[in-house]
Length: 265
Image (spheres, rainbow, N blue to C red):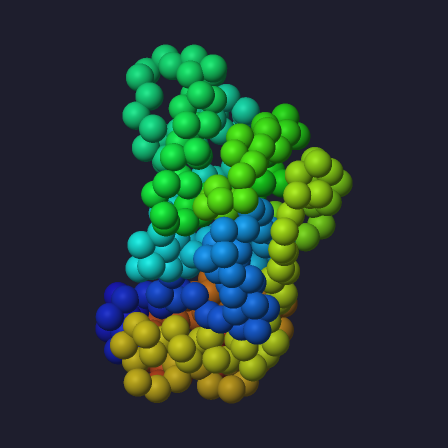
């Protein structure tokens, strides 16, 4: 296991969405702050934009973790390809509505409406986090527009946070876009962000010193285009390669070799 070579308790660049390894670059910090503002102030709808691999899904996991600590409720649905029927089913499930098997669409809608009205009296925020809304059919997006109107009261205490790719505007339902209260866009990282992320991640995983020298970090940033998911994936392969070579630090050559291996997959 390469972790032992680098003095790590665990992999710092794992593929799983782990809020502990969320790096707050300026744009990620701004997006998180904006969505927290919406939730804490009971606003209706927030939108986080970013290209694939920019960290949108991880940001939703961070919001959910913050919610657990702050004692507000969260419910997350991955929207990729969900039909209106599947969306209703999954939303009812994550909200814990406890509907019987085979419940009719009408029963689900009635239960959702009752649940949303009930939220006003719970005196705690509810954040419903919908990942990749742009990858859901337009019919599902239109259904979401209807859901937003189930309890139009300003005291509804429900905030919906959506994520989508920045270039997907043509796949959006305009009636949904019109209801967005606040949005933010996740940008690719600068080279200083990449170096700071690498150092912070290995530190959280147990290493006291940097595992990547400055040239390696700069090259890794260049090859990944500053995209967080690509940075993490390439960093993982570079650590594996560096451990096999018994290096004290990952160097530029090791990063380039790892990149060539990744490109061949």
